[in-house]
Image 1 (cartoon, rainbow, N blue to C red):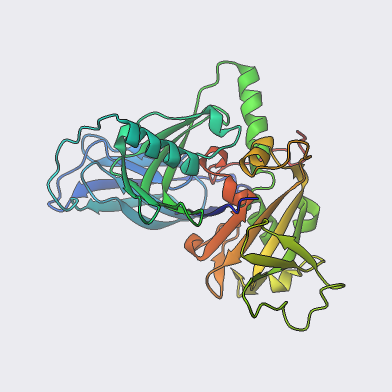
Image 2: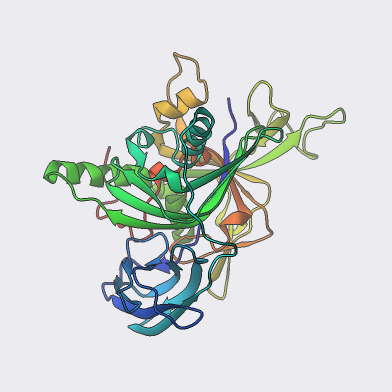
Length: 390
């Protein structure tokens, strides 16, 4: 079985969907000389909330629930700007000053060739994914993506000066993604990308398509990392279908021994990453208690677990595409969705809606590592009926 590793980073904020009151953010976008920048993009990252500036550089973002956000302002040829904002009432007078990018702007002509097509297919596989939803996703402007491949090191990198526009016909979103960094390490299977997405709702052809999109969005949410973090903060893991166990990973070396003080015949089960893996995973039975997963200090919640978390979502089965990607036997039956989660820092804060403050300090493997942009939902996504069935 392949080990799918990924860190997916999005600059996101927090809001409470239960709060009906909304506000607006108004501001101005200009260059360093005070010249207004018309048609610049101003949006709240990982939401459907945003606006384009007028000819005088002004913008208004309406329908903003109270909370903390990252306001992203971008304009072609300028460095994008991130402005943290806290919304408790109408927020006016935000001034975003953009700096030109280093170097001289020049027209870039993207020539199609077999090598670029090969690298673009790798990029799409890692960034968009390989799920059933991914098959209904199309990048509408891949010419804005710059690809750099180091064949010797097996590393593919990508950046973009403009929004990558991804049309997700499975979930009914058009996602404009300002890609800041993308890296895929072929030999380890590790991938890292981060940037700032803006979601736009697509117009359905009819009521039937709208109902199908709503159903597919709930399916994408159930069992996702967003679902897990919200369940953890709300302390509803078991009720929501999450079994969280401790896992210790040991490397197979000449002096390899099991974790000290462990009865390997009684206290734990052994989960292998595959026949040729150089690691052995020791899986402890039983649900990890909340006080070993999260700390709440004066209202600030932090993830604090050590080792790995072995997370089983019991209310959904693995997608067939996932089984094919991992080379399951042809007669294998889908099991529950299993993901690994590891902290790279002693503590990582999560907010009231279950969003991670420093996503680069987390690594996910297996099912969550396999799910990509094709399953991504906006921060302001709401489930009306959490008991919806597939």
